[in-house]
Image (tube, rainbow over all chains, first blue to last red):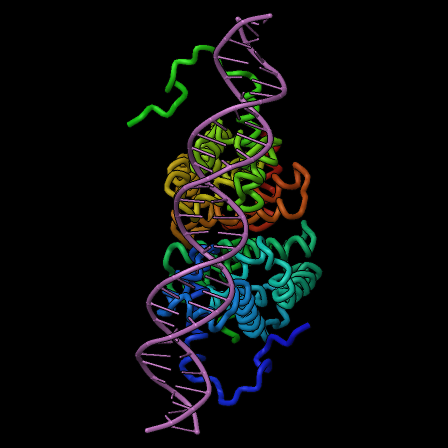
Amino acid sequence: MTPTLSSARPPARARRADAEHNRTAILEAAAVALNRDPDASLQSIAAEAHLTRRALYGHFSTREDLIIALLWRGASRITLSITAVDCGNSRMSIARIGSRLWGEVEHVRVMARFAVRGPFAPIVAEALAPLRRLLLTIVKRGIAAGELRQDISPELLSRLIEGSALAVLDEANRTPLGRDDGARLVMQAGLAMAGLSWRESEQTITEMDRTP
Amino acid sequence: MTPTLSSARPPARARRADAEHNRTAILEAAAVALNRDPDASLQSIAAEAHLTRRALYGHFSTREDLIIALLWRGASRITLSITAVDCGNSRMSIARIGSRLWGEVEHVRVMARFAVRGPFAPIVAEALAPLRRLLLTIVKRGIAAGELRQDISPELLSRLIEGSALAVLDEANRTPLGRDDGARLVMQAGLAMAGLSWRESEQTITEMDRTP
DNA sequence: AATATCTTGCACACCGATGTGCAAGATAAC
DNA sequence: GTTATCTTGCACATCGGTGTGCAAGATATT
């Protein structure tokens, strides 16, 4: 209906640099605060961004606006992060997806939060569709090739892999983990749900490290 | 300080039967509503119990009161459900825990919800301590016996098992699963995170079914 | 039938969060 | 240094949720 993008009004002068900076600061702060508490107030978000609540409204006219912008941002980062993960092998591909997602933990967790409940669920679902589609095709191929467990449907398996990976992401956020330890854990969780034993998972990961 | 239990005032006459019934109806309704949305209003809970908001206050003087009662109830059911699960074998014991928890999905999910965020986290943590302790000892023994994965600490492993089981519980709630399918899935998830391949998990479960 | 108990349906006060208006600073951009 | 932009700090209205008081109605218990 209305073009809510930046092209709304002809700016007599370009937007000030510090305003742009503050805008991203708000988004970063929102990611952190909403990760702690999905119902964090705009007050707390603004404070985390070293700004006033009133100033926040200068960038996002509504709480909904802010969250949508945040989700949009997260979706694009996630989508970007999984480009060219699909090598031929399904096991390695799953591990690689886990590794990439670990690099975007903050964003992934926010997205996951809003994917299950609240009025943003459909938006997030749509935003994450590419990731889910990719995982599903990989899983399908993996099952067909006998590389993954054979006892449940590809659809369910891909959801389970996603779910357990998120569980590990949550746990990792609780107990501080090193960069590599976290990636390793997420990869292992995905492969574990995919049907591999822990030795097979380890082997897959070291094999993968050899061929980046 | 104050004895908030039922012994507070000497009742001239016993509590009416329908009041008792309504009380449990409220708790059931709260479990359902809070499973959908952890911030469900007392209004919606009362409605789900076919009562007025005002009547709810006759049973629980505070939202906090209601939630604490709910959590207490859930904790006792869960604790009760895991009595005598620990046979000697760690793999079977983990599977059995999963199966038992599946029988209490509703309660387990509510507990899990309030275990991570909000002012009730410490209470829930304390209430779930027996379960966690049990799982931890089983995992420790399993690792020592070489029955479970050897690459991470018992503490972390038990948390991961717990997390992935909860993830499956969530997923199961999303896609309607039969009684047996759900139990199977939860058991498999636990065993998968514990390091078993899907064939080993299947074998463990069928073996377990033979010896109840 | 008499009575204590429970529920209902209003009334109200309170609180925190959201969103807006406006005037007075502060500061990039030109 | 001028100007347009951005931030601040108030004030205010609004909205939904919580908790209470009270009188009238309904119902279980005896």
